[in-house]
Length: 282
Image 1 (cartoon, helix red, strand yellow):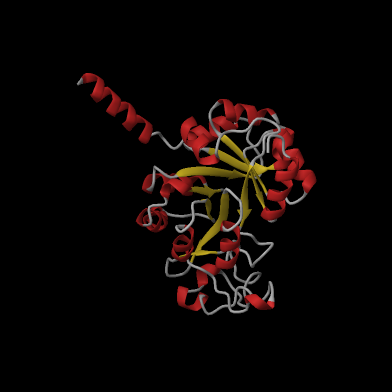
Image 2: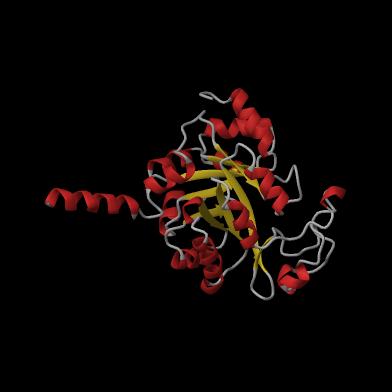
């Protein structure tokens, strides 16, 4: 009887592994890499080489590829609806002008978010996060969801509720530059992993990640090149290190030599093909 109880407790311990633990980071990223091992590929804002960024066509193109992750950005409309948009304004990727937060969802969906990219994408709309999730849930891939700017706990709750409703929480990680936003995300969804985005690595990247109970840091290649020991330090602590946004074979090769765990790229299909041809062990 005691043996059976012990087995149950061990099983529960495995199921309730903290998001910041070695097991969680390795599971989410498919293992932590050694130098030369192929890193996971994350399609930056969907496959934006094939379709307009942060739209359902770009997301679908990424999900249909041989990629581990799709990455998207979330902004809030004036009526509190999370939508896929990288910039604070709609100017660059739609036919509208002004801040995203200045539009209601009804107003935002009237904009054309595809014609700027190619005529065949004319009338493509800015999708909501719920629309993204409904597509994402049909696949077995994973997603990095960047919460742009500052998000309150209530705002993060809206995102978390949509994720839990579709039971895809084990396949999603949150990302943010904003520490308070990450803390608010942890408060409403402690079981969803969190990734800190930093343009430059701090002197103690492990300490920063552990302080905010993050499973990884996403940073620039230049910052890792300046502190190559950071990769081993993070891995020794059971934490991941990811790089953005690398789009050339030279940069991909340098990233693999560093032993990073993931690469965000605007050319996911090209990177996937390059890895298949050149990465050791593939």
